[in-house]
Length: 299
Image (cartoon, rainbow, N blue to C red; front, side, top):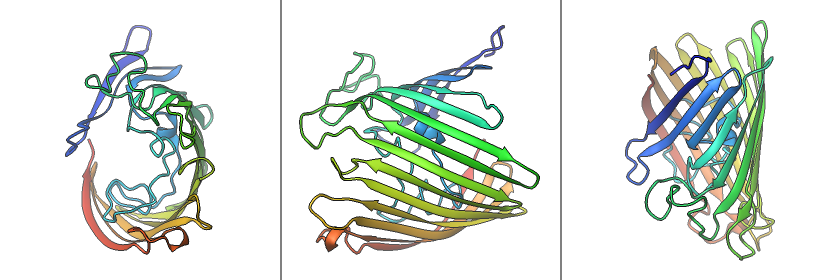
């Protein structure tokens, strides 16, 4: 609804299929106008919305952060917010700026990364911090920055995001305040798009044990067809080991736009993992080969 002063006020509720314990995803109210877009509710924050990914994925499949994956393991943690939060789309305050000459930013504040529902032990309506379980983080903040330029037949996008935990509940030395940082750049030349991105996870496996993701990919569009692919690397440090856990994934995919909002897509991917110091666990020497076929509908 648009008010007399030009401000648009509304609410959005997103439903997820086949999710028994989390049927509702993002649900929030918003106020939008020349000042930007202010949102309050259970939703993705600035870092979870504005982080950068390389090109090379379809609506369903991809070498990094895909919606659907046939492998047990995947280096899909490029989202600096989701990789650290205990729950997806928790209660928060979010602000997205207007775009000024290609530049835009976002800010968000999360009171507690366990606060999402209106009932049960994790009830946001009961108090400001209803969940005080060990490991939950309070007063988390996030930022996202973008710059987009479009020239004559070419363009580029630069961006980054950061997510910082505040006070973490618990007295254990393993309950460190974590942080995550994302940077990326994509370049489009005609029908070809190339890009790289990286996400650094501070204290991901505990104090002093960090994680690093790297990804590179491409996408080429020919009429209704888009051909893409890429490679992703995820290295994590582990206490007591001299080398890293190393997870890698590469693949190619193709998408065909049948009509507006209706796409068919397919992909072929290979994923492989090596545990630190060849540790004797189930993930060591894991590999998976997959062929995927699907479709997406948007409206």
